[in-house]
Structures are given as C-alpha cells and as structure tokens.
Length: 431
Image (cartoon, rainbow, N blue to C red; front, side, top):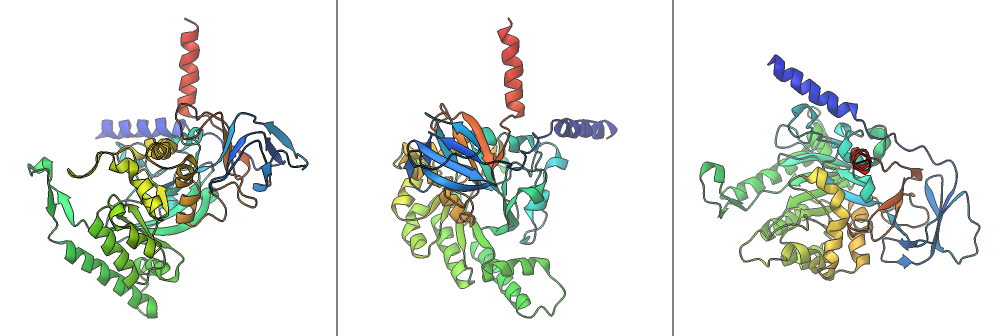
C-alpha cells in the first residue's frame, strides 16, 4: 500500500507540475482585425472584413471598405479567416485529468438522484487537456456531470481562466437526466448475447421519475419540511431558470421524454444524443425541442440502419426545422473534444452548407445553452471570443490558428503538445 500511495502521489505531482498556460491579461487597448474572411456564425460571410473590439466586446463587424477609423492594435489578416469561438456542449473537460488516477476523476457522484450536484465547483481550469482545446478554436464548453438517473447541474465556461469563478459564462444552466433505456444490449462480460433486448422495468423507471418530480413540486409548494437541496434544485426547471437536458437516443425514449417534460411543466427541454431523433423530427419541431447530436464519427447502432446514418443525421434534422448542435460524448471524449470542428466539417460532406455546419458548433449551440446573447456569433455587443485561422477551420488540414481571443483577451495557443513538437522537431533538425 505504501508503494501504491507513493506511485499515486508521483502521478499527481507530474500532472500538477505541468500547469496550464497563464491566462491572458484583460484587454487594455482596442484591437482591429482587417482583411480576413469573417464567418459570422449566423450564416453570413463577409469577405475582406473589418472587426473591432474594445473592453472585451465587439464594437464593429462589417466590410473593410467601410470608412471607419481603425483603432488600437491593427492585425492585417488578408487571406485568413475569422470565426467565433467554438462551443463544446455536454463535456466533462476539467472534471477528469487521468482516468487511472481516482483522485483526478470527479465526473460523477454516488446516488441516483443528484440534481443539486454542481459540476462547476469541480472544474479544473489548469487541466492540460483543457488547454489543448484552444489551438483548434474550441474556446468554450458546457461542463457536465455524469452518472445516476439525474446526474446534476452543468455550467458554461470559457477555457482560459485562473479558477472556476473566472471561467463562468453561465452558472448552473441545466439539469441532466439520463432517460431509462427501453432496450439494452446483453452484457458480453457475463456471457450474455450481444443483442438488443427489452427493458422490462422501463415503465417502472419512468414512473419513479414522475413520482420524484411530484415530490419535488409538493416540497417547493410549501417548503415546510426540512431543507431538501435536490428538490430545491429541480424547481429551476419549472420557473425557467434551468433547462432540462435529457440524454436519450431511441425513438420511444425521445417521445416519452418530450411528453414527460410537457406533463411536468418543464419550460425548456433539450435532447442529448438523439440517435433516432430523425424519426420524431415533427414532434421535436412542434414542441421547439432542440437536439445536441451524438458524435458524428460513429458507426450505426442498428443492423437495419443506413451505414452513414450518424453522418447525415444532422442534415435530416436541420432540413426538418429542428435546432441542432453537436456534442462529443463517448470514448476518449475529453481528448477528442478538440476535434469538434472536424465533426462539423463532416456534415458538409453529407448535405449541409459550410455556414450551416459552422452554426452547429457556434450560434446553434449558444442558443441551446441559453448564452447566445453574449457568444456564438460575431455581432456587435457580444463578447470578443474569436480566433484567426490560416484556412478553413472545419478542415483539419487547414485549421491553423494564428491568434485566439476570449472576451477580448489574447490567449496562449501553447500546450504540452506544442512544446513537445518544438522540442523534438529541433532535435531532428540538428541531425
């Protein structure tokens, strides 16, 4: 045990010793970006653009041909591209550093019903994984808990901060519910066949949820009983201060979740995952329910599904009038979050325009998270959270960032990976 404790301590020290890059200083002078192609995020593209921001806010976005004085530090970006910062929803960034080190894993809590658990206070701003997002343009994320039936409460943060208080864009934005599975696969590790089988407890599990919400309503109606934090947290779904994010994939589950939210008077519902959302797109559109689609780079789940269903699902939903964003949960999700723009790029090859694909990880996601008043597009009055790329930011071959700004602050694009690249490239150049 002593040797094991020493090993764990050594791993933690190695993690802590390589701290994140120092957060950028508060913007002290105006910055002007001139000549770039500006991708606004709302479908608009401005060739030869002019962008000015002061005190962390965008003050002018338009054509460089406009007769307006350039201010402060002028960045000439001819031939380059400017984008709003990308947003990664449903992410566990900063909650886990090393999977094998339990002390650095803080993504879930014991128990089944945890609406009061706040992921924000566990968010590690000095995560080496977090800093590796910025060189690909992922500058914001929704930090989301996992586990249980009701996992807890997420918050939206920007990815260049000293601590979680500095990082907050929107605190306690949503409660996350893992909808009961109406079907499940056999547990191969127990020798069960790897085929779909009906969950005979499905109705009972849904009823348990209904009863729990009913108890919460009864508590919040009078609050005469001892203080109950979980029940108080659920009240935010009724008064509209929080959204309900239901993690569910299959058609029946999605339909039942929409009806459940309506019955419970939940004001704002979001479907997360939504693998069979295309089968109920009319229902989703009718009730104004947006979808955060599962990772595009996936294989089909059903034997009778189209081989390219995960790739074209976004196009099907967008064409049906559903508000769609992209999320990246799954295997190696924290490390793979930096590939979010390339997931959006894949949807272009399967029916969306580049402007529509960009919206999936900018303005659409901002609307779904309820932060579109400050981020998600390059519009006057919004935060100056943006970046300059040498090429198409949705193409892994050309997305090479020159500059990134978060709330007007010039942020570092250096990471542990870039340091290693420079170290070993210099080594081999000398040989």
